[in-house]
Image (tube, rainbow, N blue to C red; front, side, top):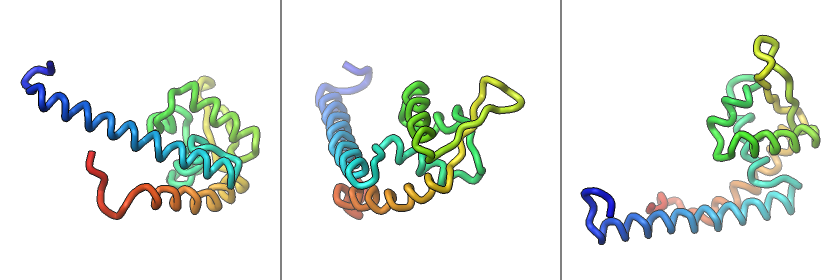
Length: 135
């Protein structure tokens, strides 16, 4: 038992955790399916594009992008490689630190994001009401 927590409190804590996991699974699967069918990208690719659109700088260090994402560093690298292959982002090495890599959104990436954003917001709207979710 967790220190200072009753068995009932612990049970409630685990129930809330499982509810959160179930919600994430349901919404992420729906997002992945809708984005893939309509725009040829998955949820992770969309999230990278979305964060690049929201960034104040023209380019972002991969490490800094990774700090804002739910992906492991290797999963992020594979996701960015797919986006680069498809011409939606460009990668470049840092002149000061050869271990660092920058990621920049291309015009094609900005256009794909603009179209996919509508799909993503629609799916989120289907799964979340205006009321904050009880977690």
